[in-house]
Amino acid sequence: MAELTNPERRMLRALQNRHDGWSLEEILSACNWDDQAIAVSAGHGLSNHGFLTIAESSTTEVILGVEGQKASEGGLLEARLWDYIQANPSATMGDLSSTFERHEAGPGIGLLKGLGVSIQGGSFGCDDSDSVSNAIEQRTAFIQSPTIEHELFEHFKGRKNLIEVVEMVKLTWKISASGIKVPKEELEEVVQIAEITPELLQGDDWKNAQFRPYDVSLEAAVPRSGRSHPMQALIERIRSIFLEMGFSELVDDYVQTAGWNMDALFIPQDHPAREMQDTFYLENPKQIQLDPKLLTNWKAIHEHGGDTESTGWGGQFSEDISKRGLLRTHTTVNTIQYLAKNPTNPCRVFAIDRVFRKESIDRTHLPEFHQIEGIIMEPGANLGMLVSTLKTFYAKMGYPEVRVRPAYFPYTEPSLEIEVKWRGKWLELGGAGIFRPEVTEPLGIKDPVCAWGMGLERLAMLVLGLDDIRQLYISDLEWLRNQPIL
Image 1 (cartoon, rainbow, N blue to C red):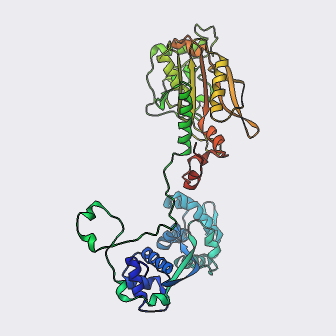
Image 2 (image 1 turned 90 degrees about the vertical axis):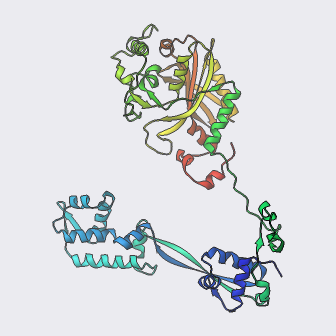
């Protein structure tokens, strides 16, 4: 006889007592089980051995959703609002808004309007209150016992989370002729061992136990192994490319001052990027102290160009604005501080980190995203070196066709925009240039500084073939499993 598990032995022993069909509830009661999964598993095992047959039937039923369960216990929204209006005949829309939650009053009035309740001058009126009450009673009766056949089914189907339509599967088990013939003594439950452990072998229990056999010919489930998120994998890939090219990585703080974030980069204090809709300014710390010498240098540069032969931006430079705390809007704020601390040491550094801007979320914008930043400072650094570095980086990323075109940024001159060819089209992926003297000279930097920056999410959309940036941050496990290994 085929080797049976203890649940299979118990279930078959129960089925031998009656030869017609058994429902799940009957099986659970006869076998003294609480978990239906045990019954279903044992039934499938016995079916595979040919000891029983399984009949499956399904029905479509209506069950209450989350909001439906609340309505069943506390009343439908329109019923609660109607009861309040009837108990307070002089109630106004303002009274309703202050009595009920904000998210309830508006939708509730819409439901009552559909039943014939009107609003005039902020007060409620109704030509036939009995009709409204009867309609609400019918809706309440439906919620207490919902069915597909009910005339209000379509109405409630269109209301969010009130009802759900589910398919209920019913299983019935019936013993077969070969199952009837199995001797009772072979269905006695025994101690079964599925795993040999050191603790087991230290005693004598295993000598009289039964070892559960394994069928190695059966298909086994493929284990789900862990893997990096596509964004993290892309960050690691970019990091390795820059390290291969001889760059060092920078990591620094999110919280910065407007001085380092903008003034140091020769962005005028009346620039649109200073406005609240673009920058997250902080209440704590509202201001961060800066070196007075820095403030003096920036003030001279902005107002009249200092000693750089620039005319500056003119106007009045505010030290209070410069000290304002904010969440950095780009990673250049950190590379420029690194240069200020090491003004005479040639370097090649990069950063891949988060930046923050007050953007409306849509398919191409997020308020929090990542930026890739790089600089080269050394004697003789020039535009040709910058373009060659960028072309090498994108070639290593798998995009050999790269072009640059003139652009404008307040802190670089000349300035470039970088484009790569993708699916036959040129896509702009970042900006680059050589820092202006107004940026480098106040910090004591004498050598040319090549700099570039690009958005990581836009590059990720390119690599993963996405057209909506939000797809990168949703918890869709199936999508994540199907992404290529970067």
